[in-house]
Length: 306
Image (cartoon, rainbow, N blue to C red; front, side, top):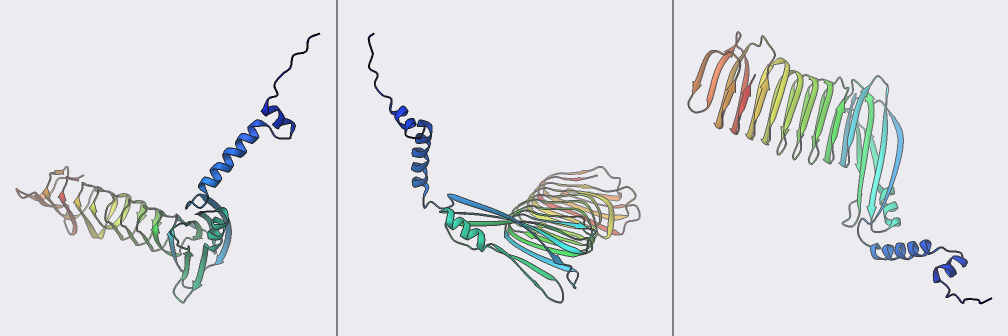
């Protein structure tokens, strides 16, 4: 019987030595990539979640400062404050990512007026940290949130609300109490709110739905859309430099209406008593018995009054 000689396959010898060819290839590629990425900023990441509670502050108010990350506050029927913290870090190595993660912390302090919660995140050019906060608080707690880079969401509260974000949207829902909302470069959204509402955005649209009370909203570049269930004694003032304004009013409103457009058109579907329409792009008139001021202004855009 003739025996044929067969050239050994390197992959088989590797298998006989305890490692498959796939494992060797993966090890070689993985090692190459790890060596290539070593030291590159943000190449490694780490995350950690924790849960803790705090007693209700004596001043019945809480102020939250979060420089990087989302902040969500929900009002509930409870006597304490529950805080869920999700930390995330990226750095040039696994060890550096873990060190950055450990350095992210929430500091709390209480004075006679409020409880202060401040997220501390280390700052280095080659490392990045963020913290997402979810708080469940008593409904009647006054809440103030300041965020530099992150979304803010507040809901279910029955007290005054203050929310400011430099680069992140602000969303408010189911809140009864005066509201002071502002953002520099993002959207403001308010749904099912009641009270005196002040909203400011530099470069973002403002959308108000189902609000009861006075309204003062202004943005430099963006749409303002508002639907009111009831108009408060303070009236309505909507102003934008470059954008459209849409206002929907409830029936049986007593108000003095003043609408002005510099470069645009005015669409009015309401019957105004004593209406005057000027060629300069201005409409004035009275709804019902008059009294409450409603002022709408845009430099470049259209205004719709319904």
